[in-house]
Image (cartoon, rainbow, N blue to C red; front, side, top):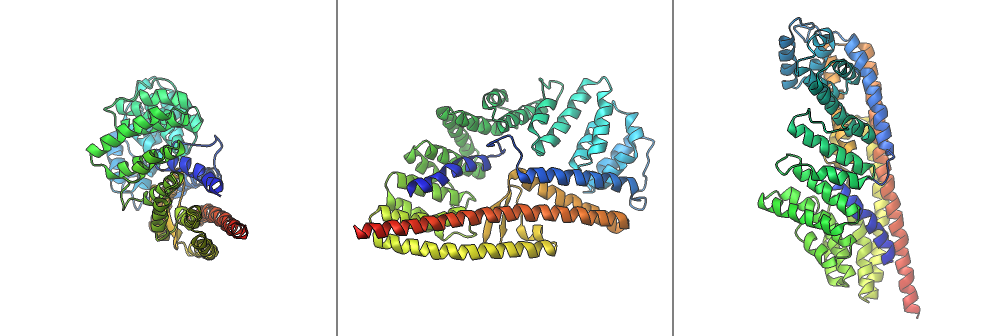
Length: 478
């Protein structure tokens, strides 16, 4: 049974490493996930809507001036609207003043306009400006336009296109952007499983750069994925020392858990326990720390220590997979301690618990359906930027890229709706409703898949608990 349990651990180790870093870096393959593909479809639908919206909506009642003759006045108006939290109106001014902008392409402010357009997913106008910039002779403007577009593509997990745009030294960029371009290229290469190439890029980022810490974390993980464990561990330990000196607790906890699972994967169980033991009690990584401590102790045949970890974990709420795993591990540890009666009772308890969990997950599916129907799915989820969210008693996690995109899309849809309340347009309102319905359908599908995956895990745990009981019965019969 330990082999069965440990097979899940192998998955957990590398999943946690990828999920807990400042930047998501590990990928099993170059193929996009189903949610990524659907996000791109939503992206395309929103771009079509955005084009029609800005072409047909009448915002004269909300904007004092729609068409400018002075570029500086246009820049001031766009910046003010953006500062006031009205990026949609700012984008509308940019779109309505393309002719004026075309006559002022030598102004660096145009790059800021490109960035704002991309942030608002107004891709057609952004690409139009980028094409105009590329027709000129200013290499600095061209490089910065490519950089803005590369950031947009990177956020959509289009790794090869990102690399193409950032090919070369990017020496025309400001130093901070040069360093960030190196980080983006390194991460994109890692996503394409080109770790050795990525290592050189991370190493090129200087110590005084804002992206240095992220680069070093990615460098450590890249070394680990290459099998260079010692180098990776040394990097992580150096980062831990830096985070300790700066009292950056959140970063420390993330580093402790990453290093702990790396040690566990390498069977350095004492080191793993030391690292897990440093994770803060109130940290969001505490559950992962407890399961890691438990598994490391069990591999040292310290079943008392292993039981202490899972006993605490069983009481944790909200529930995630580590909590479920604790119900299976506890009777197994008793079995390994030759406490067969207690182990048998534990497996029986686990079976009852897992049957209840299946019922709870069915309720979560029903809750999801109801929340989507009344339009409250996102507000009730309380989705974090890192992708964590709760649904009933359940704790789930989106891929970080999906979580970020979801938050941004919801914000833009709300801005469209608010503007349409001041400038009514029946056709646009209907199209916006369709876009929102597609968005909610995507959320429903993605969350439904998370729930179904958890149900698969629970059914697997039920099988393992039954196998544990059969093994104990066989032991008694001997």
